[in-house]
Every structure is written in C-alpha cells, then in structure tokens.
Image (cartoon, rainbow, N blue to C red; front, side, top):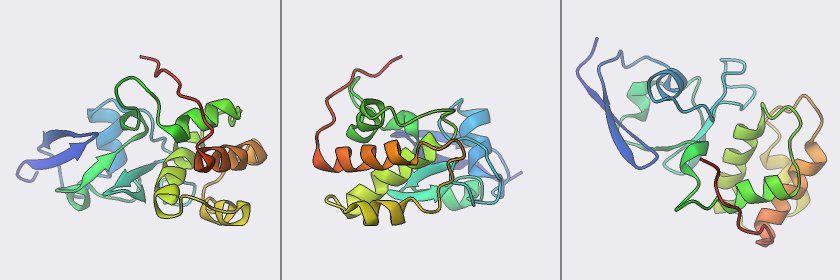
Length: 162
C-alpha cells in the first residue's frame, strides 16, 4: 500500500490508500460507483473506458491511479451541469446514437475532447477522431450525426435523469 493518493473526479477530491499501479477504471467503478466508463478490452484499444483527464480523452483501463493523481478526471457522470446534459450527451440522445450502448461512454467522452480542440469539424475529421473507438453493433452513422449535431450546437437541452 502507498500513502493516501488524492484524486479529483468530477470536481470532487477523494483520498485512496491503494497501490499507485491500480488501474484508474477500478477506482472509478468499484470505489466511486461511477459506471460510465466501461471495462472493455483492458488494453486501451476499444475506448469503452475513456474519461477526460485534464480535458484530454484518456483510456482509464491503462491509466494508473498514480498517473491520475493531481489531475482533473471527468467521467460521463460529470459532464452534466445543474441538471442539464452536456450538449454532446443531448446530441447523442437526439440522434438516437445507441443500440447496445457499450461504446457510448467512449464515443461521448472522445467527442467532448475532440470538439474542444476542433469545434467545427468536417465529417471526415469527426470520423478520424473516433477511429480508435470500437462500436460493434453498427450505430456509426448515428454517432457521426450526433458529433456533427453537437458541433453545430443544434442539440436541444435535455434534463439529466437522476
């Protein structure tokens, strides 16, 4: 065990007495009860576990607790503010960009980071930004439409569900 590690998640600071090598996804899901990030491949390949770390899309299955220490981590649950979904979340709902939903966390979190860097992307740029996020059930067309809708700012506000 190591000394207490401080982790800022969704704007709140938490202390953990865990090994620094503990995968971040285990801490998020098991210790904090945040189920947005999904455990997919465990190798950082599929994107289901993506979170934002200091605003950058980061694979939490291959990121350690020690690496995340002192950095701002945002999960899917932390995107909504004051009961209103993030525009990317609202766009995914408006475009019905889900079938099984397993990839959605990674798609949404990657899109949030991507649009922060490129707020007016082309479809080709959006496609390239999401190329390392795997979707096995075939909602790629709806996902791309959701990304472009969020970029255009045409997603209506949606009340967050408790």
